[in-house]
Image 1 (cartoon, rainbow, N blue to C red):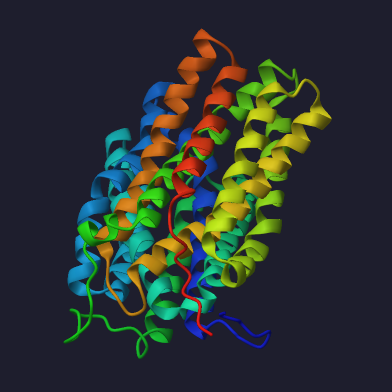
Image 2: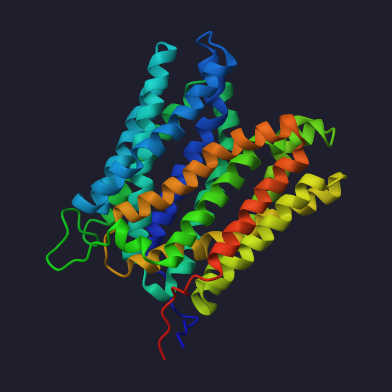
Length: 395
């Protein structure tokens, strides 16, 4: 049976990627609160301002297949650094946008860069991490992004008081630093060009043969759906059902994030010891329970407790799910399309979830919307049950 010693350490390069991931997430958190108000400053409607926010996500989704092909053809490091550079340039340019349409186009371009560095970043994580440490690496990756997302809005609030355009410039500068640091520190470790002779490339068709990969697509969709619902529906539930102010919605999201962070690193380590599948199944079950409970909670304490449970479930699920996809690829293999389709499944869930559950809340109730979201996690759990374990154990 595979055992990972206490002294086993993650490669230095994985820590470099985690730090870069934190910087990226901080910058995203800097820009996110300022973007709608910046768009409204061009005297457009609320809907038009929302379109600017959505343009980033739509570009990510549309460009994901092309991003996957780029990773396979020219290598993860080149695509990663190019994607970061595109986001840096487009974000910096947003600060000088003269009208609404310029801002819209620049955010769309930023979405293209985002999907490039996301797909290639996960690809780098797969290639640089030994199989027995993939769960731990995935937990570190997820934690760094989540912590950055928490820190970003706090810093962004102060920058907005200086200028509504300041967050864009600060984010662009931080990304330039990240490009330089990653480019230098990974220069001698990760090949930047085409696949070397004998290097394996895993096609999407080959990956789809694996029941674990198919199950990861379903659970990724359910996780993305849950994320979209949490961001869009939870604040409305807090105001309209629990009769609390909008500020309390931020508290609820922070409570969810705390549960998530608390479990991410633990889950990653456990999945390297007991396997990916048990943690994924347990995480989906806990996420489903917490989500359904959130929709029926009749008091603030119960709602916060349910929110913590949902956060713990997401933390349990994320590292082993990503590690399972990495296991399907195998060590040293390139599979840009495989990673891109997994990302797309999550993004599609995040796009469709808020729309579908918004309709359910309008025509039925918030309880129905949260129950359907929890049910999707249970469907994913059932899909995972017959899937094989992907962690290779050696004696």
